[in-house]
Length: 440
Length: 186
Image 1: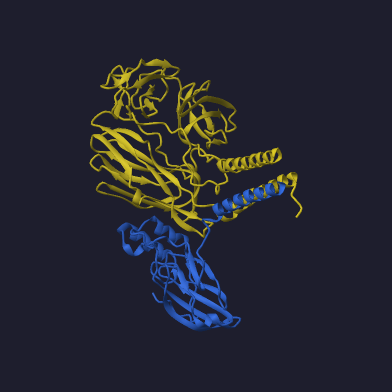
Image 2: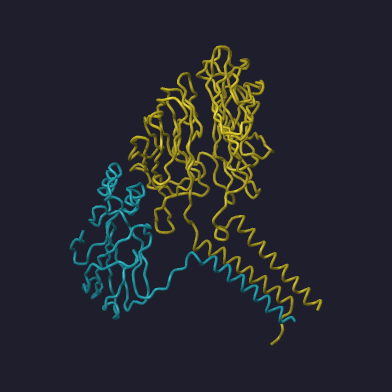
């Protein structure tokens, strides 16, 4: 038998490897395409505060990296009915509620698309499934927690012939503080829009995404509070039209970003979207365009009901920042208000510093125990809405991608890296064996 | 030496091919089929019918069939309807009709003798077992969700949930009628 030359061997190996690669990709697309995808269910805000008698709106969200064909959902929550009394469940536009009832501490909500709507709705990224409205009836710390065994995202796998499966994979609950008296802020997420990806679209080759973004407009600036799934960098494109045009880049990697958009016109609508890099810098993600309207320049007295206080991030292991936005009765940002923060046990409050249109102060603790603090800024005799912060010494920001169950079957950057890395290793091995053979 | 190197390379390539082949084909692997049968796919994990109504009809003319088997038979492994009828071992064209509890009846055209297993997707949602999944069934499930009635637990997961409602909404339609035009046993 004629011996095989080295060149022939290398060519042969290259061809076979390429055939394997192409075959793998083709097989993956044919056999396993459009597998079942899963979603995380969250309650937003994850920390809330209210006064007795006030309304508490809790938004149910779905966080899905891959698209899910949704045919309905069933949410069951454990809610302390002595502190939170169920009022109503507001499904997204085009959906109808089948069941919404509270029996003791268990709240149950089932919703499906309305009869005149398509049976299936695609959800991807961060989607609002609806809003639950409660009345705060008792003071103290309370929570709303999913009951995972009876909470379902009814999804359909069309490739498997409309196979119905439960796409709810993980659940994030909410904790809150209800005060006996005083006012609490209205939550920003009270308007329920149709189910569309409200935040970032899923990156094609990564898991990074925007979990939430919230714009606080001032008269000539706006602050964007952005929470990412994993530590990463981002930029914000914004402008007075949907063409955007301006851009702010953030070069520090973090899961929580506060981005200032400066040089804005008062009483003007601005559009923005968030663009970011996957933590592994393999891909980028973008959010759906959102908008806000800048305020006018405030001249009157401070109005507690129109003012706002945000602690961001609201959950931390040691320190965070409180942002105070004093506004007058017309909702216009007040530049000169000089708010104060009263001392609290176990909480170190830094100096309240003035920024363009708002104030901020650093909050920290050295307590080794988990602690929930509620702070209400004060301007003269006016007490502004309070904000809550959770200090948890064991809390760590997620810094890496979630482990994926697929190695080869999902044709993403990881599988690409595995396959091409394997090819390179194979090639080096062959080269090594060749050199060894020659040296003998 | 070159020959040895070639053999070595071929072994490596073979190893890689086997590894990737195993990784790719592992989820799709199915146990070997011992006898002809209909295997229903899309079966919720806990939906486990014990019996199925099976009708085997020989095609006499292009549009005329003659029923040669009409019985309720046991279902194997929750999803496999054995086709062990002697008629199906003799050459010829057949129509096989199947009705499973809470599902729409379906029909398969087969040419005997049968040697393979045939798969067919299950269409659950027929709450009142009238072989039609329509607004009546949807309403029954919706009421059942409010009362937590067990009879609308189509997927047999122990509770009436939105998954049962989804099955009914998705699988709306009329099931295949019996060849003798009688109603399927409920």
